[in-house]
Length: 277
Image 1: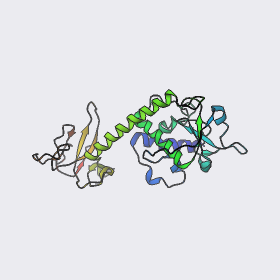
Image 2 (image 1 turned 135 degrees about the vertical axis):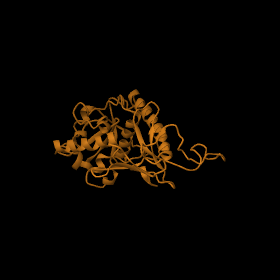
Image 3 (image 1 turned 30 degrees about the vertical axis):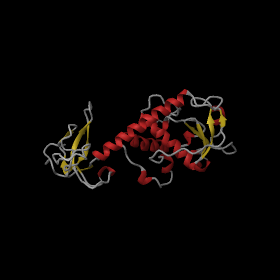
Image 4 (image 1 turned 180 degrees about the horizontal axis):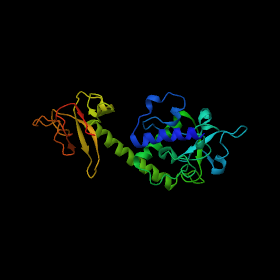
């Protein structure tokens, strides 16, 4: 069991900290249950709601002869019996059963202190991930009803905590849209490191997962007030972004953007750069 927990924690931590994309592995047994689809899915119309208390939900942990196998996310309860191999007793994600552990889905903290429904302090982008998980459960499992507690009151009405979480998620969607637009302008570079050649970055027409009709050159992109940078590919011809309709321009693309810096000892128009150790 400890091995399963460690593996799950490592995978979720990789996604959170380094942006590793798990989707090439999504069809492997169990992986699709750990990583929800990477898009915001519409939540369907729900059947008449059933209200469960925390005590009632805790009885649905999938034990032999028990009532069933449920879990809750954002106060919404789902029957996950079809995923019993993962959520049932002895399964790698059994710690989610019989409770609302919304916070752990984005923190990767699968201890008792981390398996809670308190979402305070989560970032807008983390809250989007919580909502993505909710969409995943609606798509793959059976919605049962709502959990009385943090997100729904005894009458089944949304609480202030749920409204606050929704507001943070809305802010996350705005930030994500801004990030997506920035990546279109400045797609991430390809990168690699080998013991013989060291580190290098380079651009292609698909680098960063952004398909385009130009290649670009590597540059360091600095956010205002940030000390760190990321490698991006920059257009070298045509008008600057935002001035595409203007007739007069210097035909340097976005090379003159003030947030960019060149890599040392790298030709300014080369499509790749070798990095210093």
